[in-house]
Image 1 (tube, rainbow, N blue to C red):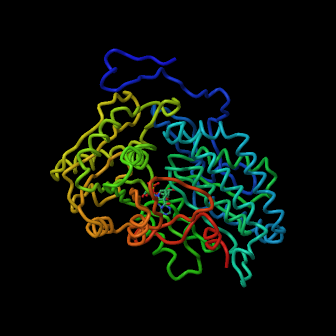
Image 2: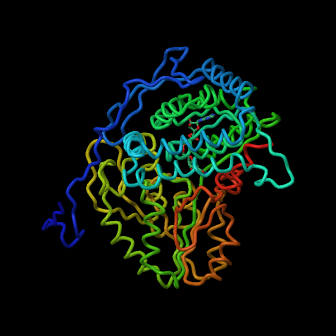
Image 3: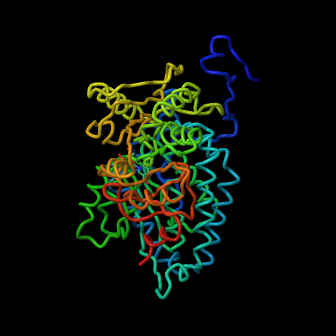
Length: 487
Ligand code: NAD
């Protein structure tokens, strides 16, 4: 049913009746153990922590906290599985397991999508239409590579590394797990994965699915915990590879910890992407791209277009259209299919975002926030933008990881390239222009690993992803994603 209210008719257009996704088909336990050696085992120290639904602050489940002893158990199990069967398993068989996992994820896509939205706060539209289909697509994609590695690396004989330790963040919990597990297994490695402490549930559901898939015990181990657990995995002497996605600060700690060891390392870190709109761009499309780049998924995207550069002569038009669009965005229940912007992932993350909003105001930038209502309970942030921003403002320099946009203007191509590259990060960027030649020219000069032309935040398993400078090194996705798991 669609309801048009009198009050909101002119300011906001249509108002939709709630359309919540059902939770009936979801099976969740009240407590989750560690997945080691193909079994769910209790943590040695008997400690558990809570995972919270950020949209209502209610506990969803207790989660085992892995200690150093548990990390040792998981690494030993991965090593045994590697030596005993996985390195002898024919590549075609490895591929079959990955195909099976991909198909099983598709069969349970709805369940994974709902749990992802409950645990992480992202709108069901995003987890249902983006995250989970991409998870299955990654497993399918790398399943296909398993027996074709020699074509990926011509004139070389790729061999697996051994045991891969993988640590992931909370913004794309299951997708980051897929980005890491699928290529590692395709190349013949075994895995110990540690999901983020605020979003462990879909990884643990994946563990259940892996158990059912018949994958040999210990090939994938999933252990939960916070930074101490991650650090124990990084420092474990029997781990051959560390694949980390997370903040630049932790990335630097990992780089120091692994320096001088034989561990192969890939780091996917923070970002402060420039989204550049030229005056010959299709403006309505570009405004949609800005909204997609920074507001959908609450700005919890490493490649979020958090710095907007608008050519001066179209600035007023773009700003007005953007504000009008912001007014139509719906912030609320992540499980409601109408929701555009869900809950902020955790209380500390909300506090960080609010801190930066206050900093922006203190530094003299002008703030504008959508007037949309937000629920009383839970962690919420209205879509926010700042104008009158200078290059030195913290909101233009530092990663906020929330729905907060810093807008600057420019006159010439050279000026915008200099401004866009004036950042320690280099993960992604967007260019909007009617002229292909301009897009390619600007794209070549931007120091960012991924550049979208007339679109934003689009992913595909065959495209490599990764950064320059403090956004990390190494690539995930595509044929390049195999390199990090072979020697
Ligand atoms: P974070 O660095 O705080 O945590 C990431 C993971 O590392 C978590 O699992 C955490 O438990 C673990 N960890 C924390 N301290 C550790 C330590 N000392 N040793 C080992 N592991 C440790 O990041 P976050 O807040 O979870 O995620 C947000 C950050 O991730 C943002 O900076 C974002 O840009 C980045 N990110 C990057 C990409 C990318 O592909 N480049 C993708 C998603 C997120």
